Image (cartoon, rainbow, N blue to C red; front, side, top):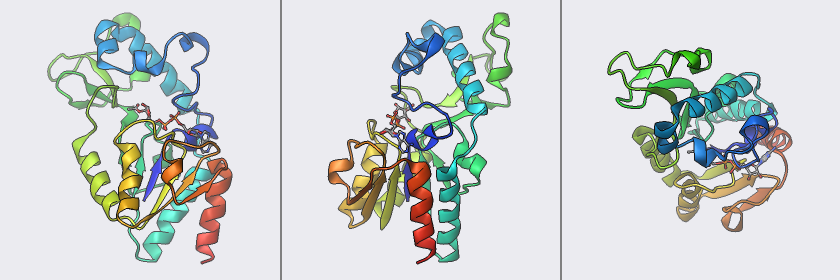
Length: 235
Ligand code: OAD
């Protein structure tokens, strides 16, 4: 099992979630923008923020850490072992690198859905001219929004169930680039530990999980993950 957070994309140039926002958006915190309340109060500001984030993330490319997880997945498959990557990231970089077995816990910023009925829409929000107003759902005329989980919203049920089930019987858990600041993601590796699994954390800083984790590699993922996977490949 692998659980990733924003830190794995830091070396792709995507700012981590709790890093200070810069420029135009510095005066807002993500909590003030990524919420149903913010969207109801000022949908245009929220969508402009996402247009900015989508344009930023569109320029990012998978880094050696993302690529190492693709090699790890291939190694597990060759050895007949289960592999599952649970990501809290919405930047699509794991998919772009070629990972297959992925659970997107918090959605995907490149997908669009209706805020009212939830229907996914083939609409690129980054290409919408907001001067013409907020785009509406073709089914129910509700407002369109990114298909990501906002503060105070529930996680996609299927993703959550898979994550709990697989974490409960995981014998080796890699936790990469997450502060483990939000639940339930922070509890998945603990569940593996409680069931006798080993948990290894890759993060240059300590996280909320660090005190309970079996092993830590206090290095950036772009260096530590390729080295770890190479060692595993050499058996
Ligand atoms: P955070 O910004 O909270 O944490 C990023 C972590 O990455 C920190 O612990 C950093 O030390 C670490 N880090 C930074 N650079 C790194 C590198 N090069 N290699 C490895 N680690 C590095 O982001 P998340 O933990 O992903 O939820 O945040 C989890 C969730 O909180 C987000 O998905 C978001 C937020 O609420 C939703 O949007 C629902």
